[in-house]
Image (cartoon, rainbow, N blue to C red; front, side, top):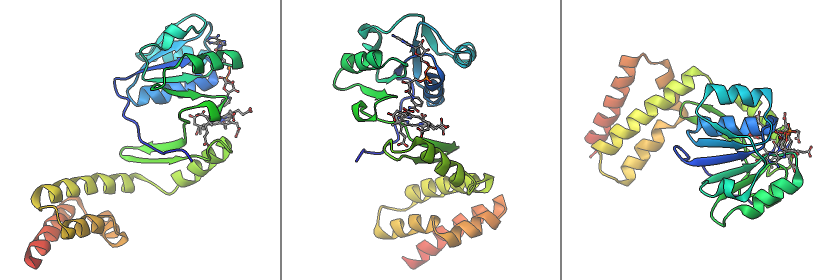
Length: 212
Ligand SMILES: C[C@@]1(CC(=O)O)C2=NC(=C\c3[nH]c(c(CCC(=O)O)c3CC(=O)O)Cc3[nH]c(c(CC(=O)O)c3CCC(=O)O)/C=C3\N/C(=C\2)[C@@H](CCC(=O)O)[C@]3(C)CC(=O)O)/[C@H]1CCC(=O)O
Ligand SMILES: NC(=O)c1ccc[n+]([C@@H]2O[C@H](COP(=O)([O-])OP(=O)(O)OC[C@H]3O[C@@H](n4cnc5c(N)ncnc54)[C@H](O)[C@@H]3O)[C@@H](O)[C@H]2O)c1
């Protein structure tokens, strides 16, 4: 079993080897996460060219050589050459995060299908059994969330910050924090105006103090 994580790669160096369709997809998601991306490839596709002109990503027009990944935090081998992807794998140091787009078993991480909307992130993996199914599951789950959920999550973040600042760590505080995520509270928040939402939070804190 693989270990699912949310990686903070903002400002970290990432190298994508290859310039085709798969490399573009991986490079785009790395840029979205704030990584400093370098592409190594003798040729790049039209889509990669567009990405290169519209963002801060750089391109070295050359075949892969081991020194290309020396300082990288994260490496993606996305060429159509098995030998090259294998050379990338062999060139990686033991603590570099490396993904081989044609070899899940040889990868230190694989990329799940995902959907991100503000703070909401849903990711699905089949451990490489069927990327197409992962993609379909995400498409189906995506349908279940809308702007109201995004606003609800933003409000929960605010409530949680206020509760953590106002109340000492205790079992009761945990009960309150769990209550924020309950279906009943979700319903109340979604039906409330922004002023009513603030009142809900105030009432919650007042109730809690009265119970002390
Ligand atoms: C989710 C997504 C994320 C992303 O890439 O960003 C992703 N693949 C996506 C799409 C996709 N990939 C493939 C198809 C064709 C249909 C099919 O094969 O099912 C489709 C569907 C399509 O394109 O519509 C072909 C394919 N994929 C891999 C191999 C190599 C191999 O299996 O050995 C081959 C060649 C197989 C062959 O030889 O033909 C390997 C991997 N692909 C993974 C991720 C990792 C496992 C994810 C998991 O656990 O489910 C893993 C293990 C490694 C990795 O890449 O990290 C992205 C959806 C993005 C989106 O939502 O738009
Ligand atoms: N993980 C996935 O989601 C997924 C999906 C489909 C395919 N694949 C696999 O990913 C790989 C790439 O697929 P694609 O459709 O992007 O291929 P592609 O043919 O469109 O692109 C391959 C790229 O690799 C570059 N390249 C070739 N030799 C190189 C070298 N020595 N150094 C640097 N760059 C080099 C080429 O210039 C080209 O830009 C294939 O091996 C395929 O099996 C993975």
